[in-house]
Every structure is written in structure tokens, then in C-alpha cells.
Image (cartoon, rainbow, N blue to C red; front, side):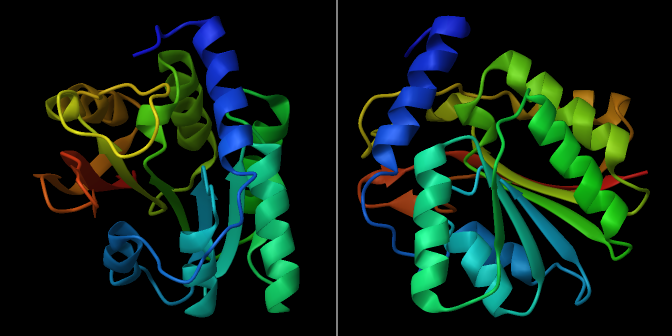
Length: 219
């Protein structure tokens, strides 16, 4: 695994830009998206962080929620916009903004300010794909701008997944300690409303990741 430093951050950005140059398919949502959809208020505004191919963003939009989706990869956002044009839909709203940049902070602040409906931030397989510093920035921004009652739905690989088989090519990953992350969430004003971990939640071919999935509520 690459070391968690600036060189790793640069390498992972290059990796994802290359990865998302392939044609995108948003037909099938992730297991996590299907789960979260059952927990969302009907009037929620969804902010997806690290939208990648956009498959979960398109899924949420098809169900009638207003969706704003962000990714730091220009290739990912271009692919999502191209697919949106191909499908002839007005949603989701895609933006290229990487965690830790002024653009990301500004986008989050603007979406929250402009939408008085409940905000649900959604991040699947994103937290383990960013550095420790980027995680700190993400949580700090969410703690600052989310309102009481707003939620954060998050799924990530845990330390128990480190030895598991991976289908995708070797690239930057962290293996997160859920308890340490939840403790930090509490210090930032989040209550853990739901949490579970294990195998079977995010299986893809031979890769049956050991993940944590949880829903946090801003107090």
C-alpha cells in the first residue's frame, strides 16, 4: 500500500483520472445506496462525496431526490456529465471538487445554504480512499456546515479488510478503524444513529470487503 503522504495523494489523483476514462455505466446502484434509500426522508437533498461513475447519484435522482455529486477526478465528472447528456436528464448536478480545496468547501457551504430541506451527505468507499489529512478536512467541513438533524451516510473498508482479496488494481487505500472514526465524529458534534460492520455488504466478484457502514446525525 502506498504511504499516506503528499506523493501518495498525487499518485491516487492520477490513478482515478485514468480509471474513470473508461465508459461509465450507472444502471445498477451499490448495495449501500439501496440500503440508504430506505432511510432517507422524502424531501432530502443528497450530497454525494466521491461519486465516481455516478451510479449511486443517478439512482437517487431516479427515485426523486435532489442530488449534488462531487468528485476530485476530472475524468469522473466528465464521464458523469456525458452520461447525463446521453440519458437526457437534468439531475444529478455534478461538480469537480476535491476534498481539501477551497472549491470543495465553497460547494458544500453553498448547497447547504441554498437548500432548506434535510441534507444527507453520502460517501461510499470514499473515506478509505483519501489520506488522513483529507479525512480531517472532510469531517471538519461537514461539522461546520451541516445543520442539526442533517445526516452523513458512510461506508468504508476497515482494518480487518487489509488482508482480503482485491479485484481492482493496486492503488492507494487506507484501512480505517471505525471506533476511532466514530469517536472523532462525536467530538465534532455527530451522534452515531446506526452502525454495522462485516462481510457481505459490498461484495464484488472475489472481493468481499469487510466494511463498516453507518449513519451519523448532526446534533
